[in-house]
Image 1 (tube, rainbow, N blue to C red):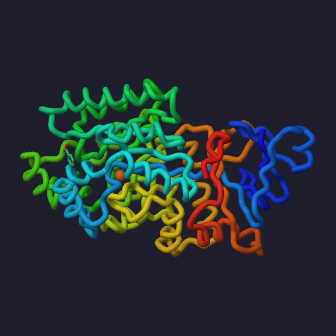
Image 2: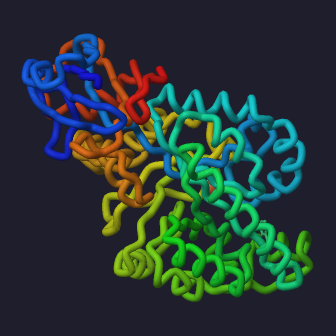
Image 3: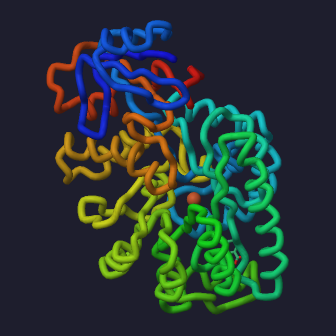
Length: 404
Ligand code: BEZ
Ligand code: FE2
């Protein structure tokens, strides 16, 4: 047993003061430190520095590790030139991205307090690293392929990867999950089969959706920059799905839709009505010229994610939160900061079906500890100071073990 004491603890009831947490691999009790010492006399005592705040470990819901070697290869600023540059540089980038490169990025995520992440995997290359990192990983096996001729083969390969991720469930902190690449790149027949698998096995399900203006124009009118793209690379000139057909395919299983920057209000309302949620990737959206998701009007739960280094400059969740404070300038600062902490802890945990994300008895002991440079003068600004002043966490625990 361990007892950790910090000036503040972020709980489902807000920040609490003068309390401590007793934990094994799970959170056992929250009370005054003297009470806990009486109950657990043999416990190891961890006294955090002054001005520290104990948070549940942070969750980055959507990351593509396989692109971790990108720095200046991919073209930022506009979605279609970016996608073209992905096709052009993909092989080289994935080739350069060995386990050491990906592990270094897992460690950088940990330094920013991330104890859990959602790994979007196209080929299964990340599986070994995701088994080795101490972090909890929701391993999203991605299905891609719009061409009916290759659909069965691609689906077969996808199912092999799903099974491989299922078989490491016991020996690591991996939980298997399914990702659908997008409405333009997945044939409706295999899409429906994959949704059925997610439903049967109760697996988390995610999909990129309405990320760019070009995607919207292609799905609605069969026109725009995607037309040239599909003619060039796939020898086709019609979309495989409409916006509505794609959305309806997920009616029976709550899905975490990534981006939705180009979704209209009626589409967001539909997603909300079906119990879906959104992964918001503000820096990726800005860097690829995809617009801004208006989180001030969202009527469905959202999480925050960095996306991959294919469309970002770091996988730090703290960097991502600071970007949100700049982009969503209409929401009062303290309100937004609190919403963001909630989004990367309890909201993300609920959406991914995990038992972490909250400091409450019975939850997994995943913690991120932030230390402020001086005594916070007002409690209502703790979330804001956490986001503005923290580049790294002071300590990090996963299932009761210290990793930083
Ligand atoms: C496709 O299979 O249709 C596809 C793959 C990658 C990007 C876009 C489309
Ligand atoms: Fe993505």
